[in-house]
View 1 (tube, rainbow, N blue to C red):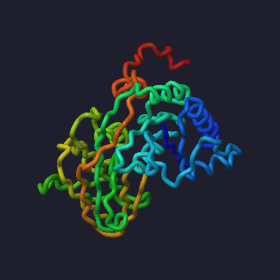
View 2: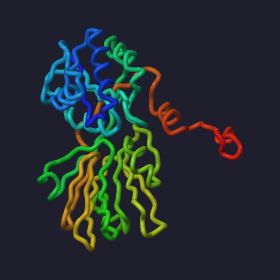
View 3: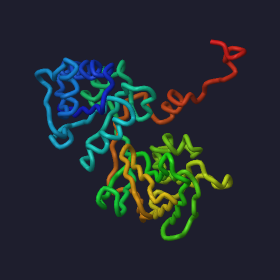
View 4: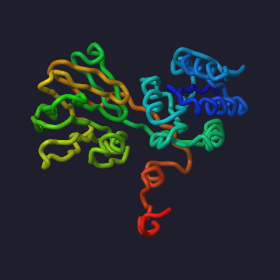
Length: 298
């Protein structure tokens, strides 16, 4: 069984963890397949890839069975982009802090590897957003698991973003920006800006303003099959368009078209894990603030 692995700009403290996970895979009879960037990071730390580990420019196109994302949520988003339309299931092993998209932490890596080897897991499919617009990646259609956002630059004045849903005008948002999030992304940037949490099984999108100038403007949930058109304008004529971890600077008003992608991402779901477990474990749901020490002490 060949397992693709990806780590993005790993912290020095995480590199030995990646080497240990590769060793666990080999001990269980699995073949790790790493991209050249990760192989270079390992070698620079004095931990070159061992015999039994393959190096490929893009493991996702070399006939692998599964893809392991080794790092935090940014690495997971990169892994989704690497697997593209292949349908290869992705499993996240969190080597960072929160790791909301990951199934387990490093200490659970061996159990995860054994579960994968024995087939003791399920697959959950997640929807993607498709984005295309003049000036964004040369007009290429891009795909995002979490969100697309239009954002003013640090020193710019606020944006005016016009939004149409299925050809019907929704609103002009005067704000620092606007987020269009998938159900998966509803627990990311959109949540921090006051958006609702959606179960990943929902077929919907969330439109969330960032620091709206009009306080009566609130996030809105629209059907997942909607086609959105966004058009931003700013006095400075430059603003940012972000899709997951990729960012583009535009210098003129441009129509941005968003819709549900035709393909979906396949998440590896380990036994005993799930979205509600994640809400409780990583967002602290169910923690009783009444049990805190009086006066805020330890």
